[in-house]
Amino acid sequence: MASQTEEDLTCPICHDIFKEPVVLSCSHSFCRSCLKNWWEEKKTPECPDCKETLLIVEPPVSLTLKNLCETFVLERKKKLSTESEPLCNLHAEKLKLFCLDHHQPACLVCRDSKLHINHRFRPIHEFAHEHKGKLQKLLEPVQEKLKIFREVKGNFDETAEHIKVQAEHTERKIKEQFKKLHQFLQEEEEARIKALREEEEQKSQIMKVNIDALSIEIIALSDTIRVTEKELKAEDVSFLLNYKAAVERVQQRPLMDDPQLDSGALIDVAKHLGNLSYNIWDKMKEKVSYSPVILDPNTAHPDLILCEDLTSVRLHSKIKLPENPERMMFFPSVLGSEGFDSGSHSWDVEVGNNTHWRVGVAAESIDRKGLPQSGFLRLLFFQNEYTTRSSPDRAAVVTMKTKLKKVRVHLDWDRGTLSFSDPDTNTHIHTITHTFTEKMFPYFSNGGSLPLKTQPVKETPERKGDWKSRWLFNESVI
Image (cartoon, rainbow, N blue to C red; front, side, top):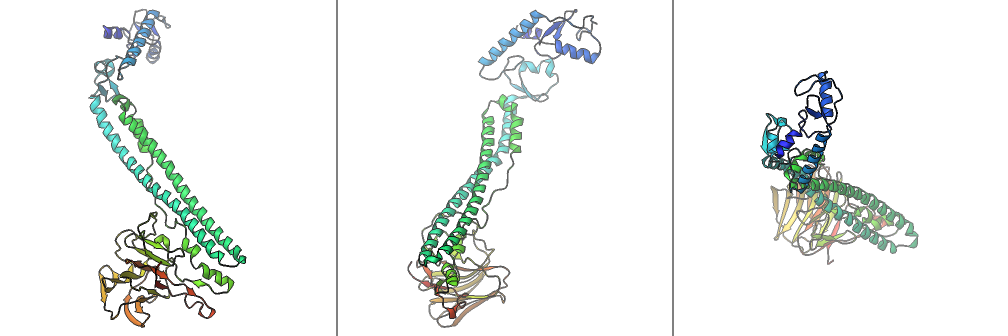
């Protein structure tokens, strides 16, 4: 009975409940707008049903039919509001099908109606499950990208905090050294602190821009994921109604390349602290301590700790450091702050009673995170055996009559040689021949328990410049 009443209230043209129904002289009824469009298309006022030609082009509204339609619509809306799941707007039946031609949910009555003649249908749960799977696959790379961004942002946050710690530490050391000088050096102190501040501001600003950009991207990705996940949890009908928009929203979210921490993001501590006393002496023309090679803390393995003036190193329990590109991660090693790409250079390293050490040079392009394969030329001491190594498969055992206390490293970049000798006895140990094509950095590592400490050179006018190519490490207790 309900379906018969609904059929009586349905416009034969639009197949929907009458909207402002008019009745013709032949007793057939249609929506006013539907009839008007029909007549404009046919160019003649005739009944769309029986084809009778009409004399009245402004048929009257059927108030009775209009009231019946309005009552029916109100009752149907009331019924829909009491149902736990969406119902068909036309027939108030459960939406169990999906019309592949109209791309919309439909009920069983819709399937047999004129509106869906010869249309294709799929069970709505089956169709929704299939499309949820497609949307979930589209969402997975977005979720993975969000995970990566959060991890990278975590490292960026640590880097930003480490920059502040480095700046505070460097400033404190600068002030401590300047206190040893005369009052008129105040201007020099202020100039150096200003340079440090500017670098801190510049690099902190760069990190802030990177962090802000990541934060914005994370918020955008989070919003996309949150909204999409909400769609995935929605009822099948609601999900399918919003499916196209959800797919577009996920696909339109650009997946930018994974951000990387740029090399040189950290404070250049070596520039501010390296040779500080010597540079002041050069201006003041009086004796100062000078270290010709400064260790770069940004390259130090987390198991190593440098002294505050960057002239000694010792093993230490692992400390939390940012994962910057310059840092050595495979073995407790550290590089000098300046490399050589020409000329001849030598330095002495006092190894003392250390039981496990390496000295030599390392190429600028070495793999600092994984297992080193090439780029290292070094003399190593381990298990009471001396070995020179220029590549993973090129090693030579060196026989020594007495245990070395010092090792002199001599790099002749232009001639392509790296020589090791005992400065105490002036005895040659071994020479590695190699064609250098890039900048080489002083390299050493300490796998033993004793620290290595550089001994500052006391500069005098007659020896000025004589020590600029020498690097003296003395074993001492830090």
